[in-house]
Length: 326
Image 1: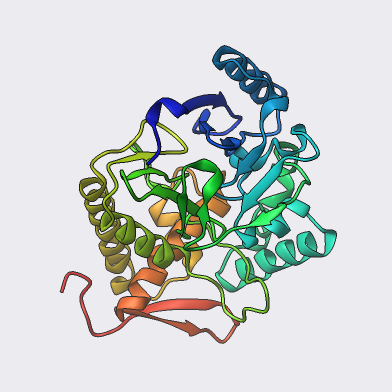
Image 2: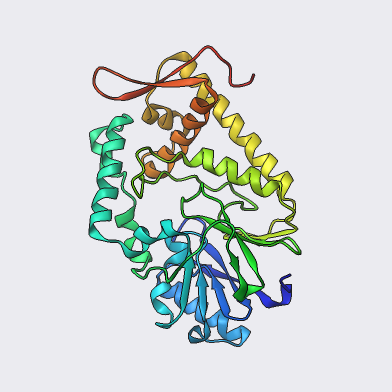
């Protein structure tokens, strides 16, 4: 059981569309911060100020737990004491250490896949997202790896759930005695998280399909006795089942829209992306193409569409003899 008077939600400014991120100070056997905010002066100043209001300094933090590797959740790692414990899933590591070999691989992967998915040459260089995010993150890695089923005794015995989808490094934490949970960006109160494509790691030969992972993670938490889910953005969620149902229904509606597009003619992922996001795809190409490919993965997994290679080597989707509404 985790006493709620030992939990402090701290909302910090970040230089992204969401404008803010929530991090959580938990007074356990070790003073723990769940997520950190971006590596920006405004975020750091705000964190120091909010900790001071509670009665702490940055130097008092003994443990940091990352829900996932995105800079708004892991960017300030370098600001903590040298002996602070940093816990997270193993898949955080390459994004935190930023070894040049990984960055090269990351960029090459997205360039190659952008071409395969039909992105015009003038837009291909917009696909990699790491470089533009670099100022907001850090190069400090984990001290301890945690994964599905691990128990963190230092903060009231929270149990680790591996909940990939928004990121392959994503974990959630749950107090099984009372249903209090920390969900990072898994389920947000006002907006749907974006399942983001990442390159294969650790010898994997196939691309991870983030939307399928994300759906599984959502369905999983909807079945758990969670009474209150503290989230990475917005307010805590209490009606987990209802919100998950709403998110999955909206996703199904979008998939039906994509299916209707492909029924008219075979399309590349880029062509679908243009039609799904006509106003923003050029400015947010990586994000919108990830979302589009997620919907295509969803339809392909159901057997409604199939992926084929054209004579020019570009991948194209066409419908099978089914209907997404069946």
